[in-house]
Amino acid sequence: MAEKPTILVTNDDGFHAPGIHALVAAMKEIGQVIVLAPDKPQSGMGHAITINDPIRLQQVDVFGDVEAYACSGTPVDCVKLAKDKILHHKPDLCVSGINHGSNSSINIIYSGTMSAAMEAAIEGIPAIGFSLLDYAHDADFRPSAHYASQIARQVLENGLPDNTLLNVNIPALPVQEIRGMRICRQAVAKWEEEYDERNDPRGHRYFWLTGKFVNYDQGDDTDEWALDNGYVSVVPVQFDLTAHHAISFFQKNWDLHQTHPESHSGRSVKDLG
Image 1 (cartoon, rainbow, N blue to C red):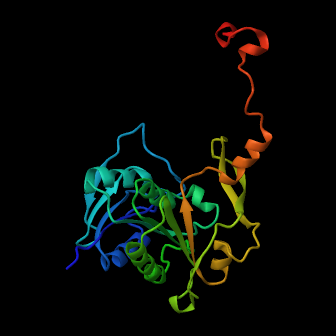
Image 2: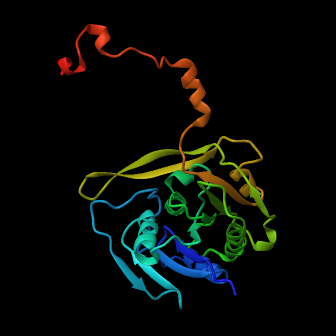
Image 3: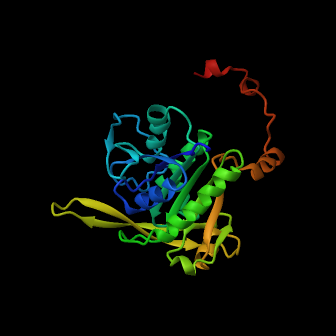
């Protein structure tokens, strides 16, 4: 019998969140699961790492027979520590989530869920981030777990292209109403934000971030279109942030052969200091 794959499960909502419990249950049907997740909610942390404080790990017994740890650090810290101190090797798959709320389009930039998956991908581990478009604490994660299982199996069987991970978002619909999966691109959208200014009882100012999500993209090949039309969106993501399409612009329009600063004044850079 083939050995079961090792699957690292993490998230940004904390190890008590219903979404990670649904994901663990789904992954237990596929492989040997290890959980390392934040000990408190870490939404919006992006790719933050802890460098000025100690990070603490505590083994927790909240997933039945699954080995699990709570981490005082960020979602990215969780992946780094899991690889270095718990597993001591690369797992066969890292899954992050299931997040409470969307991580489609530009939300991936801010997402702790996706940053955990991205850290795994940077380490050469096949990785997937899962998010459900429902912010309710009592959200129904069964449809999401169903698709998480399907997608995880396909990744384990077929692999992923080099330096690529998957951003998967699931509409808040009963499983029988979901129309299937679509491979998509990230929609061009953003948050139009403002800060609500208030005063505390002592008269000191403070601010709450508010805003609305605006989709500028009318394409029918985007994650936003897929989700609006009842599909699970699957977006291949890369961590190479180079704007490859822009390189030719700079090569064409910039003067890349300027002379050394010394030739302009006869004085060296050292003299100018």
